[in-house]
Image (cartoon, rainbow, N blue to C red; front, top):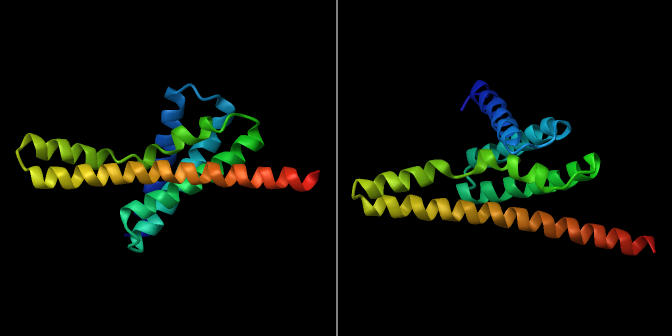
Length: 150
């Protein structure tokens, strides 16, 4: 994959994130940061996927990066973390796999349909696990930071 295509995908992941954030009525002051977090998540995903780590691990690490970036953005902007989490995960959503699963079910190719269905489920699970690990890590960090201040 050449550099032009990666930059093209990075720009469109930013635009997709901002577009989805607009539809969710995210405050204007958070839109740019949402887009940057979404683009960062996509860049991490694409980088790991291109070095053959596998689609599930790439999504897990990208979701972890999005989650940790959302924690930082929420602290910087003094806004809830969910404002940054939800729109930023849009580029990672396994819509293509879900579409292929339904397509192959419709045309009676159950083996391929189940393959794509399981893949979509594994990706969704990896994304949720990445968010969970990010939240767990942030809570542990802040709990330790507050306990050392006392």
